[in-house]
Amino acid sequence: MFKKVLIANRGEIALRVIRACRELGMETVAVHSTADADSLHVRFADEAVCIGPPASKDSYLNVRALLSAAEMTGADAIHPGYGFLSENAEFAEMCEKVGLKFIGPRPEMLRLMGNKVAARAAMEKAGLPLLPGARGVLQDSTEAEKIAKEIGYPVILKAAAGGGGRGMKIVREGQDVRKAFETASNEALAAFGNGDMYLERYVEEPRHIELQIVADEHGNVIHLGERECSVQRRHQKIIEEAPSPAVTPALRKEMGEVAIAAMKKVAYNNVGTIEFLMDEKGRYYFMEMNTRIQVEHPVTEQVYGLDLLRLQLRLAAGEKLDRTQDEVVPRFHAIECRVNAEDPVSFAPSPGLITGYHQPGGYGVRVDTMAFEHYKVQPFYDSLVAKLICWGDSREVALSRMQRALDEYVVEGIKTNIPFHKRILQHGSFRAGKYDTRLVEQVLATAHAEKAPAPKAGQG
Image (tube, rainbow, N blue to C red; front, side, top):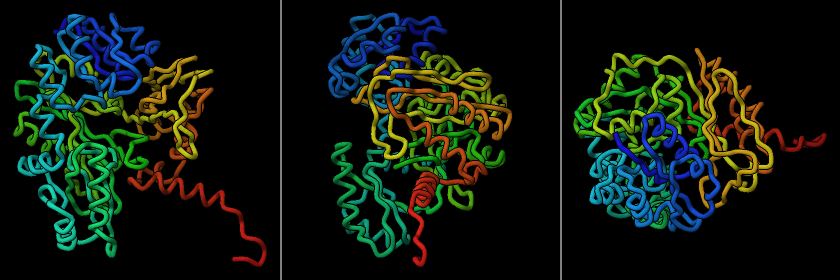
């Protein structure tokens, strides 16, 4: 095991890593910007080092400052959390060069999966199904137009080096593919420093299903089932649940076997998530792989009774998986709501001082957060305040428990999206488990229709 782990992150995930390390008897080092000096992860770590001013590029993305902090404190491993440098192959390589264990997949795996085109090619070769589309980087807008005509509309253009909805454009029949290509490529270049694009068939009613992978450094791989991540706004996840209402035990077994075989072929190690797109007929297609712990990992933990952070640390230390696939059985249903500091109507960010705070509790309720009364939500970072996770013996129990927990949650001084979560949970499609990535648009459309003034007598 490691003696001392530096957490190259902030907020609730830094706190989560600190707790896992402490349970395993490892000391921890928190790093923080000047804006985060009073954060809980700074308070609860064994040591803390300020690495720069508030801007991420000057602190949490400052590789030199992070490596200097590790050297100064005598850390022998770095946990990147999620976001920031968690999927940065160059950072992982630099850690290895200075004798630090990067807690995550090998640098070459980060590099492979970080390029969406290369990852798609590798996963197709390893046996995962892909949507019809370009099998490499598009040379120019002319090629994009040619392939779009061949596979049929609608199509979607995606950034080869990106994610999160940036550098992504949907093009329907009659629309200008060339113009969309140029716009998306420029957006990707500005966001990721790489304007390469690829193209594939667009599914009109898609469900976003992801499969949790756990692999040791000795060739053993298991999966921990799927998570449904279809509740999204502008390609950003809002609510996740597991198991997915759309995945049968037989389909879960099939997806898992195909995914495990692919991971073994590329010799994947540590934790990761394979993201699939599922169409209206239940057919699934590989989209991308996230080579890090996911924001929504608690959903899987509550369903399977496994601590993914402890697993991640132990696997990085060279331990073998202590269970086989047959020993991994889903026990509960779990739902996670991401509580963000944002206006529930306009979705505008709402940073500021939390003047009153009470989080829900009771059986089947978990809150992962760095928030407390008088905590200041910073405007410099992601708006995530907390992850509220509820579970039960069935989806119905987990759903009713989540509704109760949302009613109990009190955050004063800033606005949060808790009211919007309540609206989603009350929507008929969500309650029935028959929804796709268009659900948020449908909820918003219903709200706008309800607010529209009624026509006067004699009109319409």
